[in-house]
Image 1 (tube, protein in one colour):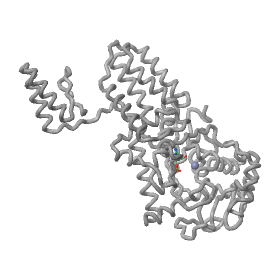
Image 2 (tube, protein in one colour):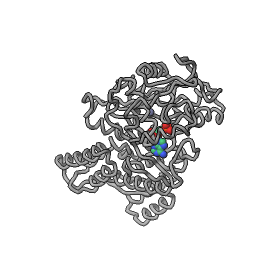
Image 3 (cartoon, helix red, strand yellow):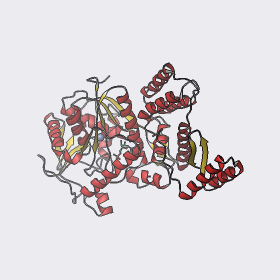
Image 4 (cartoon, helix red, strand yellow):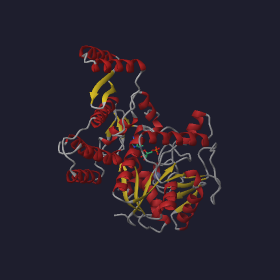
Length: 446
Ligand code: AMP
Ligand code: ZN
């Protein structure tokens, strides 16, 4: 149950925009989209907030490594602002291709530096921060339940403090709230703060922006599972430290990873597949969405081109079946309602999309439903699935083929079936299939 029904506040960690999203990232946003659509279907009034991480951050979650944005600046010889704009646009082009709905509120980190500084100040005032070596750190030692989300074993983590590269930290798990002593002299994005000119630590943006748009406590927070041990753990620490330990988020929902046989797909490794690559290889991007929906979001999904090929064929077959859907039954409102309930039960059972797809197949194959019942149900289910199930591809028919079709129609009128069959074969040899229907010939690409 939400904190303030029927309103639901949902915060999703958004993309870092120093490179294209890879299809692993996009799997997480497909899962967010299904969650969003399911909440709306259940009648909740949704406020879905997603951030855009356009401040440079380090390649490792633990405040170490290279600054991701600076890596991109060197690679592309553009300003950080141009890079952020370019990859933000690319991200939304990808999400549009995947029928991912845009959240009600999008917020860029660089537009919320003031809010981040204010939250850092609250944390400092409440005694959870210390300033040393030019940076403001969060003191995880001050929280007795630090790491509760990930069930971290704190004694082991504190042990690690001695080996930590950053000797300013009191505890291994401490993290930076505000940097003034950047490890990178050429940092382009800098802002004034009470601690000096610098830039925010990574985690603070999500705490600051979620509280601005959703309040100090809200219902659902999502992200990929990689965020559990560090990013979300630190978001909780900051938010609860700032509000005087009010329990922050009611439900955490994490999506499992898309993996390849070589291991996880990661932006920083440089070996990632983008949606554009998928499209360039001739796949419909919605076939990738279909591929994602075939596995529960809490299970790892192994990506391979063969696997995607299989999903793509199944998706095409499904659409073809739907294009020809017929129903021998009469309109049956009771049966239709029972399928609606069944589908809703599956999506409400922790977003069980594989089983929801099975219900869709049952509908298509049920002889007791009328054609109209089936079309209504498919359309209803597609509001959640987002698979363009009833959208028919416009087939562009070359003039040469159209001429053959016209000739064949003429032959059929003249009852010259031998000629009509020969023409059908000729059309087929050129890659098109003619089907004779009550409404006239229907043409499909083979
Ligand atoms: P990023 O842009 O790197 O911050 O990641 C955006 C989202 O994608 C985050 O919620 C990550 O947890 C998620 N993510 C990163 N890698 C993968 C992956 N291989 N599979 C699924 N989700 C991922
Ligand atoms: Zn976040």
